[in-house]
Image 1 (cartoon, rainbow, N blue to C red):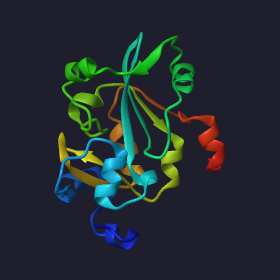
Image 2 (spheres, rainbow, N blue to C red):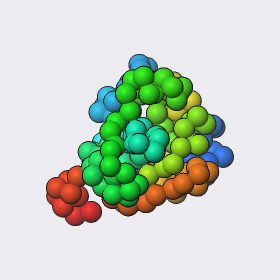
Image 3 (cartoon, one colour):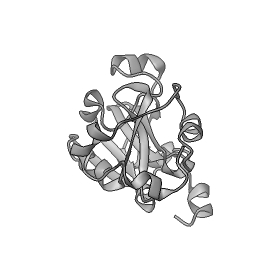
Image 4 (cartoon, helix red, strand yellow):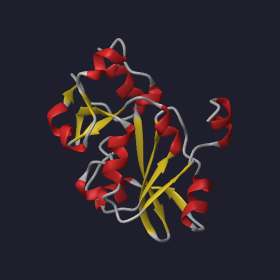
Amino acid sequence: MYKNYNDIKNILSTSINELNTNVQKLDRDVISCKEAVRAKNIPLKNELKSLVIRTEKGFVLLHIRGDYTVDLRSVKRKLDVKDACLASFEDLILLNVRCGTVNPFRDSLQKLPQLISDEIFRVDFLSTNYNGHLNEYVFFTPEVLLESLKRSPKLFRGYFIKEKEREMNNE
């Protein structure tokens, strides 16, 4: 589908107001980051991975690049909590989302505290699912993500990825 960054520049949202006009469609549903990048023909580092994390203080939404694994110890330290785990299928239903549709632009998730991992700002563009559909997605700059997350009640920045992965990629 996309051969290089120049192909994407024409449909890249550089402000939050452009997102609805730049929605793209896939010919099939995708759930995981790996499925999404294969369908879009983009590098895994450009796919945004948004995860709902359950803590004893409630839910938070975590955003990392698709090529990384979340480090729950870093999350617990940043939030000053003892327990943190990925939300269950039932938790997602409570939040009115399902697997593959979690993203930072969902109204039902913007009320949650947000964690954004700083390695996101080392790429030119990101992509994620959109509008709650498994076959719709958008391309946007990391700055659009940050603009969107400023609407949440709390925003935390830091590194929330496995240290070994960070060292391997010189992050």
